[in-house]
Structure formats: structure tokens, C-alpha cells
Amino acid sequence: MISRKSLLFLGSVVLLSFIGCNEHTEGSGVDVLLTHHFEEIEEGIIPTVYIEEMPRVFETDEDFTITLSAAYVVITGMEIHSCEEHAGFFPKLLKLFSPVGVAHAHGESSATQIGTPFVENILRPDLVPALYGRFSPPPGSYCELHVEFGPADADAENLPGDVDMVGKTLYVAGQFLAPGDTEGVDEVAFQVASAAEDHAMISFSHGASLSKGVRHFPVEAGEPSELVLGFLYDTWLDGLDFETVTDEAARAAVIFPNVVDSLHRMAH
Image (cartoon, rainbow, N blue to C red; front, side):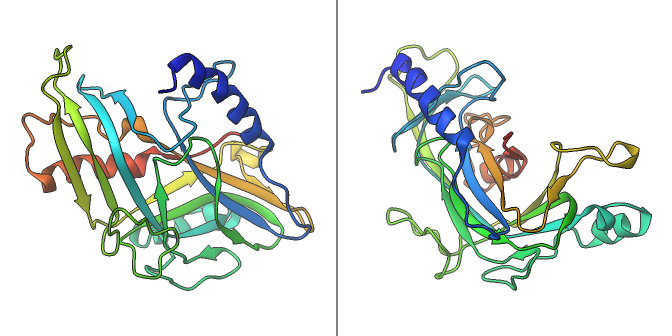
């Protein structure tokens, strides 16, 4: 069993490796990588990092102690939007009625779209980016990324061997301890699966400023770059009272929006 002190020390090594990211081939465009982590990452503070596939243990905002023994989420597509698309009233009105332009289950891919379903395993090592796909957008400034969540099909990438994720968007399983149970003798097993669909919109907050204070992700000709996205998984079960909410579908209705909201751009 690895101690928390060891995790913290090794976490600094993993974090330094992560900051360096991966090497690129010239002209490869924008690589999109997925990762996940425990706790908010603050500058100057080394976070707790799980360096191998092992249960995650954390407390929710409802004071339940969670031991997460399995957790998978499916991303079915992404689309990057230029700042020209992002600006103005009419484009925003269009996005209100059609927030994501990518399709489910191996949808169409293009220079600014990736239509590949991908299963992210939250129990693989923290802060280790996995390649999701690659954009090849024209040079310019990009202000938003739309990410679509939906059920995996049989051809989805990274399908696990321990859980059948076909037809599922989310699967989480583990045990919880009720608030005040300091002895740990009353652990209760749970599992939640969902085939819900949703989308996340990520506004880029790093890079040079444009007019009116808009910030962007720059793409330059012949200059490959990386876009790293992370799930903050210790927030997934927030707002859920396991003792009051016992129905799996009702639990999923609380958990799934937390999962979508937890996806964010990792600072480089």
C-alpha cells in the first residue's frame, strides 16, 4: 500500500512530466489529450496523485467517504470553434439551439471536428495524458471547444475489459461510508450506470488577449500544439445523499452533470 506521503512525492515527479507533455511531429496540428486528477491543482501546491490503477478515496461535499473502484466516462466527439464563430449575436443564437456540431458514434471528422467515441478510465494513473484525437485546423484564433458525451458503441476506443460500456456513457462503482462513520464497518456498495447524453463548452482562458478582452487558443502554420483536458473526479459525487437517494437512475441524474461540469482545460 502506497502511503499518502509517497503519493505526494511521486505526484511531483508525475506533475513535472505532465507539464513537459509529449513530443510532436512537425505539422501534426493540435493534439487533444485526456487526463484526470484528484483535487484542484493550485500553483505552488503539489496535489495528491494516484500513480497506479488503484481505488480512489475521497470525501464528498455531503461528507460521505467514497472508495471508487471503477469509473468510466465516454466522450463521443469534439469540435473547436474559431473566435470569428464565437463572436457576435447570430452565432451565439445558433449555438443556443445547436450547441454541438459533432455526431455520435464515429461521427464525421474534419479539420475542426473529431468524431471518435473514447472511453476514459478514471482509475488509470492520474495526470498521465492519453491521446484522444487530432485537429488540423487552419491557422487562426480559437475561442471555444465543444465536447459531446454519449453512449459508447462496439467500435469505441479504449473499451474496458471489466465493464461492458457499450450502450453506456457513464459507469461508476465503489463503496460509501455515511457521515460520522469513523470505524468504516458499515461500507455500502453502489454502482451507477447511465446512457445520458450531454455536452460541455470550454472557453479558452490561456493565451494572448484579443479585442474586448476575449482570450484564445492560437494555431500557427507549421507549429504543432497540444490541448490537454482533465476530469476533476473527486467532485463527481458531490450533492448526492446516498442515504436519501437510493434509486440508481436518480443517483445518475445527480452524478452525470457533475461529470460533464468537471471537464476543464489543463493549464500548460
